[in-house]
Each structure stands twice: as structure tokens, then as C-alpha cells.
Amino acid sequence: MNIFFDRIETDKEIVVIYKPYFLYFLAVALVFWVVADQLPQNDAIKTLASLFWFTAIAVVVWRYITMREVWGEMREAMKNGAVVMSGSKFNPADPLTVRIPKPLTSNPST
Image (cartoon, rainbow, N blue to C red; front, side, top):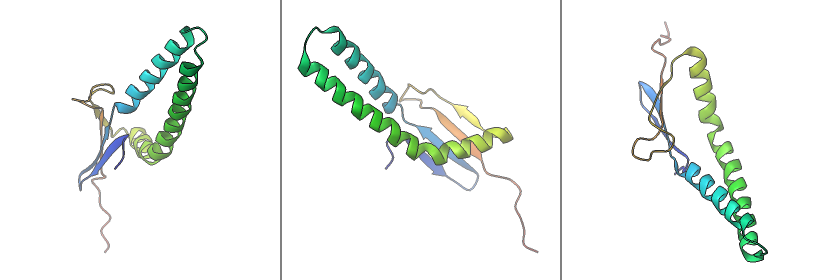
């Protein structure tokens, strides 16, 4: 189970569906950090904000590691002009969907 994306492979195409929850997490981390920075001399809140940011950085690294293969597939398909994107990065009802068609030519062994 991947919390960042779903990858569905059929005989005709590869479909990658991004999940927006990572972006929500980063937005909450940013708001929490700004609020903690505005409170004067509240060490408990600043400690929690520091731990939250450490967790956010760890999640960013984890996302980068898990998404490398998918980004490589997308980069290659974009070079060939064969990518169809739809949806929104921030909308869980209509998430960003990337469709990469598989090559139509087959290599028959004759």
C-alpha cells in the first residue's frame, strides 16, 4: 500500500493516481510552524513544531524515494509526447491522474 500514489497497469496503459494527502500534510506543517513562531517564548509549542518539521522532512525524503520509478516512467513518456494528465493535485474527489499508453508496436519473434 502506497500512501502517495496508486499505480495501475493494464495491457493498454499505465495509470498513476496521485493522492493529495501529502500536500495537505505539508500545508498543516507550514501553518503549525508559522503559529509556533508567532507565539512568544512557548518552548513546548516550538518543540512540537520542530518535531513536526523533522517528520515532514522525513516524509518528503520517503516520498522522493518511492516516487522515483514513477517519475522516470512519466519523464520518458513525456519525452515521447504520450502522457495524458487530468484532475487536480489538491482535490481528493478528482485526483491528478496520469495515463501513459503502452507501446502499440510489438516485437514478433519470427
